[in-house]
Image 1 (cartoon, one colour):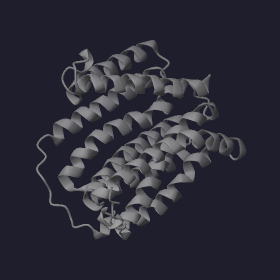
Image 2 (tube, rainbow, N blue to C red):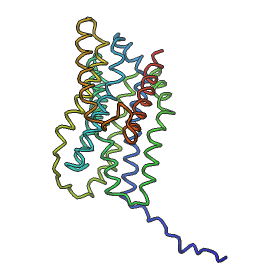
Image 3 (cartoon, rainbow, N blue to C red):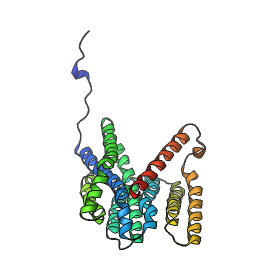
Image 4 (cartoon, one colour):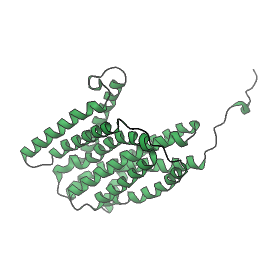
Length: 292
């Protein structure tokens, strides 16, 4: 049998400076989003204790995730409509501002507002990174990007809680939120270089953007109202806020998900329901275990 010549095997194209800059900046940004989500969960008992606001624990823990999920829905449509540039920079700005507000918040209400802004920014900045891969990366390099993104989501779950706990014990929980915006600025440098090399995207029609954004925002607000209900002291207020939050969530979610999701219709609906159930279990345990 004749040996196969190595010259006949197609080689992967060399990485361009634009691809390298995108890889460094995007992996760093995703790592920061994942770290803040997990780190905040770990130290949240210390945060609410410092404010003497134990009933606010659910919304202080979940406001960022609820806002992030809503923003993720909107970010895809916005990136298609206006291009990834404006969406990404807006996301980075909101993420950093939200962290700063949380770090300096004088009371738990301001802290929760900062957490919501942080989550909103995190949702807006992640989606355009995937759009940029399609625009910048060579097809042969895209699997490497996705593998690096997966590592960027997983690695903070291994080391983030320990780092956040140590920083909180040594210097206080505010440093966990206050230092990260500096790193966001560092990550923005290579990403800004990539965006500078891209042509300005032509605006596209977005007929579904208004309805999609409205439903996503209503779903996020509904979830946060459900979390807020537990922080209120008046039973009447608790009941009213709970009903409003449940109504918004029940109304908006079916309009965001494929038909048949909640009855586990075969195909994509059942797959989404399985992921939704798994995520709900994981997040619920991740929030409650540090409190226990």
